[in-house]
Image (cartoon, rainbow, N blue to C red):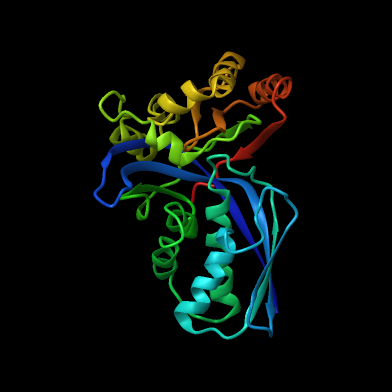
Length: 284
């Protein structure tokens, strides 16, 4: 038995950090939505009781460190599955980019193996399992658009935002999420208007969505990595309607409604940034 599953990237339209929790995590409030830049996961059932990972990207581990591996192993351990799976990951989402590539791979494996192994689990049950792997996995199980709270695992579904193009640009630099959170000064950040963003989505008001994009982690990452700030400035200069860093970075995305402007921004960014992508919002 073989199964192909898509694992789409996510962007943060709004990311707020409220306070540090007693468990060491941060309490967050994030509006996230999926885009049609996606990894492809091929699952093949094995008779042997093992999880095998094949990747074609030297930056992606092929052992227990891989979130897709952890997802398969978690299902096996939780439900006493005595057969194995061969997981081939074809990466399209850039690695360590703030786009939840690893989390989306894990979510795709949970959904795919639920079908392959006929476990009959609901998305809610899969999301609950996914929260044990990483904070973004629960959201990625559902996809679409949602408000994520807690440490990111509490999901409240939202309608799809107004349709538009998304241009994503990732500089060569790597960003440590742990380092970004460690350097975040909660007393000095300017909190985005999460409520305003949610209202804009419900109203299907594109201009209002653009007005309310915000990410408190930019205050750290842009200071630590000036090249991220440079991409953000250039994207604005080339004419994107709204520009924001996704997650802890380093990927910056721009929202664009007009096709004519899209090509100009893409060409401008390709002049100094290798990893530039054009995607659509998946929304629902």
